[in-house]
Amino acid sequence: MPIGILPTLSSHDFSDDTVSDEARYRAMTRGLRRLRVEPFRIRIEGRQELELEVRGVVLESANTSWQVHLRTPPADFDRVFNAAQLATGPVLAVAGNSPMLFGRELWEETRVPLFEEAADDRDIERRFRREGRVAFGTDWAEGGAAEAIARCVRDYEPILPLLSEEDPAAVVKAGGVPRLEELRLHQGTVWQWNRPVYDPAGGGHLRVEMRALPAGPSVPDMVANAAFLIGLVLALADDPGWRADFPFAGAYRNFYRAARDGLDAALSWPGREGETPAAELARELLPLAARGLELGGVDAEEAGRTLAVIGERIARRRTGAVWQRATVAGQGRDRRATARMVTRYRELALGGDPVHAWR
Image (cartoon, rainbow, N blue to C red; front, top):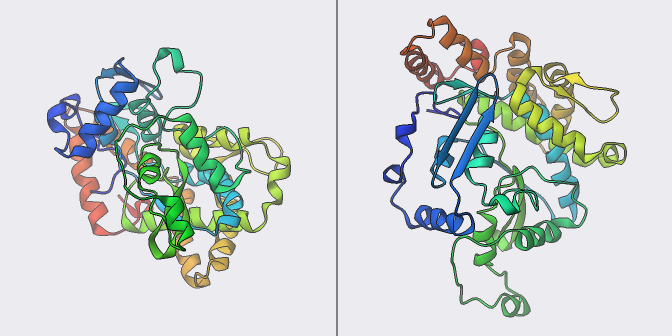
């Protein structure tokens, strides 16, 4: 079923025996443990606290996301990537769907701190030398996709082995498009919340992958989340003047506050003084997202109908995370309350109505 984190998971679901028996996952575990001999310590402070220790990266599998790729010409990369960094905060705030893990109520999007700590390859000595392999970033993009990818190669050691016989320079000299298999595999093991993707398909192209959205609660919800995010990115990229007076720290704070506090997060935005509750800001950004979708060629009626799902969600203050918590509370919070909530969630998710209409 489409959900950010399955609330009925227990610690017994995460061991070496539960990892898919595929070479990629075994090699990934070995590679990360080669870089970090210490156990992976997970500590999340939210509505409640969770602290545990595991030997490998198996806790990554608790997360299910809804990843959106936006193709962009290389010359436009900085504008599109920076727009994605700014847009992610308010969209994530209205899309939270991962409030619980191992019986604890944590962040609205617990996937964010869980993934960052579950795949952190830094040992204690390197903890503050650079960001972990899962991170939001430290500054606006200014050097194009080549610089962003070069930084990824420079800052992170490869953890998966792949030796290609291709000579990329020779391929380019002959007028072809190099596959760059080693680079692409390496990029696939550095999980920035927004990251560049090079793909040789179709004559070669560049995408911005936006990884922060959770799966669920329903298909209409996921389509609406994607529309809101893509619309904002296209509109912000079309008019990049906002960057002149808006520091990257504002986008950084927005992202983590949105993941932690959801609709109640206090967010900043270009052209606004002070901070605004996320629900209010997101509602006011819907027309901007609609304009962005129209710039991208989406029919105006379809854009309006899809974004109306976000509007209703805000008006009723009911994200997937809010619905999950309220339903568990309504079940009496006994030992089986979460299981009963998950059963009901599955019925409603497969029924096709967006979460604001759930009862």
